[in-house]
Image 1 (cartoon, rainbow, N blue to C red):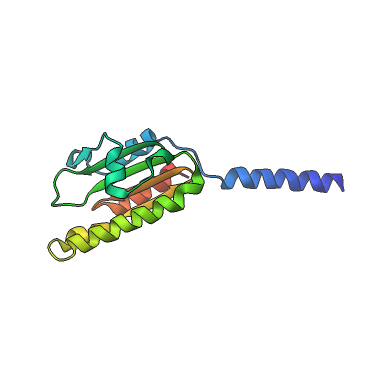
Image 2 (cartoon, rainbow, N blue to C red):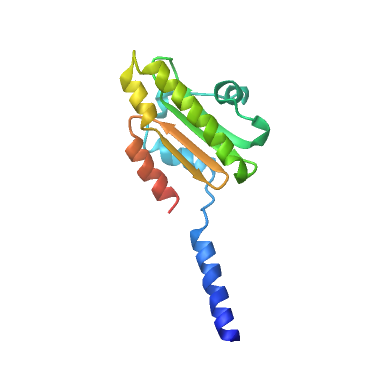
Length: 151
């Protein structure tokens, strides 16, 4: 009986370790994305107030971030990398990101439908405390790059 319990315990630990999210730094994500998309078309947003103003985020719940927005209001390209203090807050941030995306689609659907389509096809991923949002023409390449990073 003890052997069975030990074997089950070891199997459970292996499963838990194998199924857990890999902890990848925001810099590693950014570096991987830079190999996939052209960051020269972005403007880096340095002030955390940008996140509050743009997404209505509770910035006290953010541990670190990288935000790259479009250089002009003629396009929607963006990269948002968030590291939250607590993974349980991810759903709150997802709701705010979804609202942001819905608003962008409404704004761009009539005068720049190609940009609205980019927003609709954007990449959103959660990995533990990390949230990744990428709005880009290369959304399929971004998905592949993130899959490689988190495998």
